[in-house]
Image 1 (cartoon, helix red, strand yellow):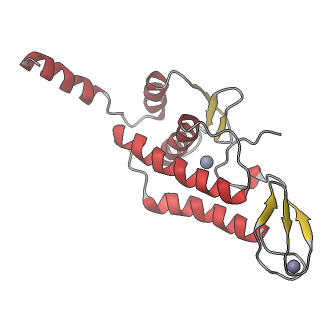
Image 2 (cartoon, protein in one colour; image 1 turned 90 degrees about the vertical axis):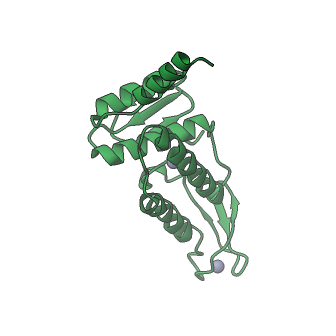
Image 3 (cartoon, rainbow, N blue to C red; image 1 turned 30 degrees about the horizontal axis):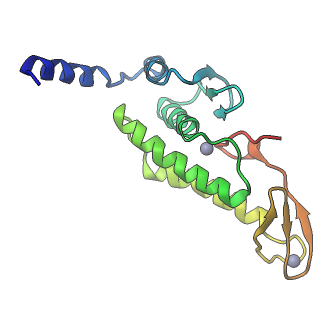
Length: 173
Ligand SMILES: [Zn+2]
Ligand SMILES: [Zn+2]
């Protein structure tokens, strides 16, 4: 490789860094990820059906970036559906891991605290759902919408509950 080619490659790399404004950030990522559509909304969300990432432009810049990268990671990982609550937690952790990697390319450092807080919200949610309403025993999920207590035989139904969580992926009905 010639020296001049090296130089222009360096220039390009510098050109990737993102300025402070949310608009610049979103414009840059839309350019870099043309496979997905991006649209503003109130709930951060990845829809595999419409191939669209919804972000919340009202969020403070850091949270907007974190949420945006997180949904982009779900999109890149091809997350479409999940079989049970525990799998959802794994998908969430995977999305955060990739979001942190993508973030590095844009000088966005997603704090581990933020990631752990988000995952804790899911863990708490999972903890509540898996506790038997009759005897309090914590049990494993039977299928995507039911739990069954091995201790007292109570069975209970759960909904996807996706709107109670801070970050969610869409669930095919
Ligand atoms: Zn029970
Ligand atoms: Zn998520």
